[in-house]
Image: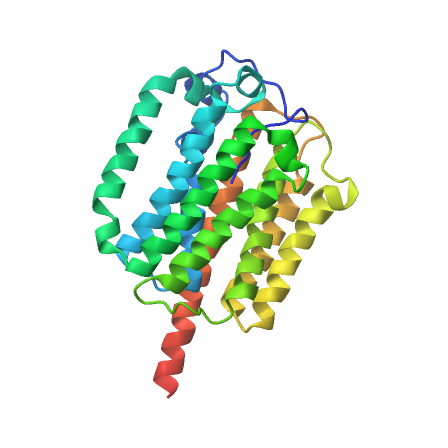
Length: 302
């Protein structure tokens, strides 16, 4: 789950398009860039971990995926109006800038259709709580666009983004049709998810940046510590498949930091965000499968 670049992000030629950048990499790299450009990676993370901790209906899964996708897409669309972000950013920011009117119209259309169709298929309590969370996120987005320095003085943007995604996942898992409003272990689950999502966001920022990523807790060590916190928290409540997934993600990030070149390579950094997100999503789906197998084994043993 990526966030807009800062001064430490690698500067890239503003004229490069997604297609031009893709020509310098592999076919897999091209696919990863398009996944990130269309904001499809973050919804996959949310969806995977929703299944890892809950049992959503198809409509609930679709609602969460659409909500996360729309939030990310709108944020990037807004960033597309900022010249400094576009010049320093990745293909996802240049795409939003190049197609700002068409992309904006598409976002409005998706929002209108979603609000007209999806709420009728969700539990009333979920619609109410989800609306409150959505309003809070709209407020956060507005403040972040208007006064980013003031908002980020309280916490890095990675923490805000991670908290929002984790809150949405826990909300849909606990307040959905098959969930319980008092989702057992909601607090530790939310904490573990915040740590995991924050590790993902921070790792992307560091791996996309031009500076080395080994500067103590502000660098790769801090990211790996977040993964360890997630692992310990999941394990402490007996969520073993989820704990294994958190441990696996830490191993993936350690490998990514280990093979990171000293200088940022534009063609390579374009695949960092979708690569990390898809790894976290794959591990989330693996945790969901593992949880299902454990529950099936318990039923057969009883």
